[in-house]
Length: 337
Image (tube, rainbow, N blue to C red; front, side, top):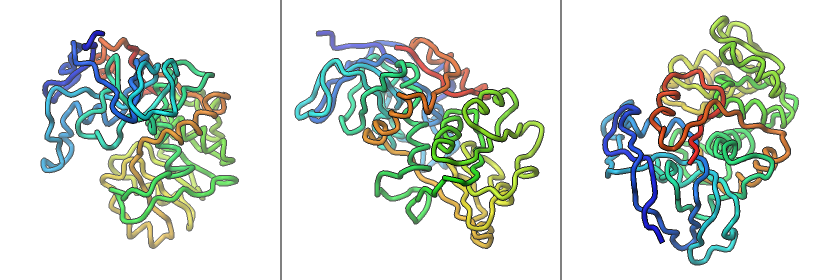
C-alpha cells in the first residue's frame, strides 16, 4: 500500500505562489474516522486567511504554525477505509463534509489533497442529484447559511458575542442578502426563499439574472446604488461581506428586525442597534454531518443549487487562489483532485 499522496502544502505564509503541489504522507483513519479519496475540494475565505498567516489579525491571535500544513475544509469524495468503531458509513460511499472546523482553523484541515481523514460525525452522504464538484462547493457555505437561518445545531460558546445566536422566522418576512453573488450569499438567497421569505439580493450587476433565477424578487446593484438608499422596512439583513460600515444596514431594518453578520469583525454600532430595537447577531460555522445530510436533501431535489465560479486541477491551487483574490466571484471555486 502506497503511504504517500499528492497534496498542496504550505512551507511558509504568503501569496498564492507559496502553495506547493508535492508528495505528502497519506493519512490513516483513526478510531471513529473514515479515509476519503478526495474527488473535489473547494476554496473558502479561511483558506486565504490562513495561507496569508492571518496578517489582518493582531499578532497575538495569529497562528503558531508547524509547517508544512495543508489548507482546505470542504471535500467531496469516496470512502476508501474505515477506522475502528465506524458505523455510519461503508467503503464505497460517496460523501461530503466540512472537516474539523473551526478546530483546525489555524492549522488547516487538509482538504487540498488526494486523501483526507474525517470523523464520521462530520460526514454526510453526497446527494445523488449533484456531482462531486457541486458537493465540494457546498459544505462551509451551506452550513453557514443553515446555522444562521435554520438551526444553530450546537451549544458551544460563541466567540463573537456573549449570547447564543438564534435564527428568526422567515415565512412572510423580507430578507436582504448583501453579497448575494458569493458562496454564502447565493445559498442564503435560496434558503430564505425556500423558507417563505421575500428576498432582496445585493450584488454587482453581473449577478442579477442568476440571482433572480435563484429566487430573488428584488435586485440592487451596489455598484450603481447604495442598498441603504433604496431598501426599507426589511425584517432581516444577512451580510455575507463584512468590512467597513456594516452599520449602514441598520437604517433599512424595521424595529424588531435583525442584522446577521457572517463576518462581524469591525461592527461597532451595538448601542445604536439596541436603541433602534434591532438584534445584531453572529456565529461561527461548525462542522455538522447531521445538518449537511438534512440540507443535502435540498441539493438532491434541486431546491437549492450550488453555483460554480470556476474549477482548477489540484496541482493548480495557486491559480485558484489568484482567481479568488481577484474577487467578483459567482458561487464557489473548486479544485478537482
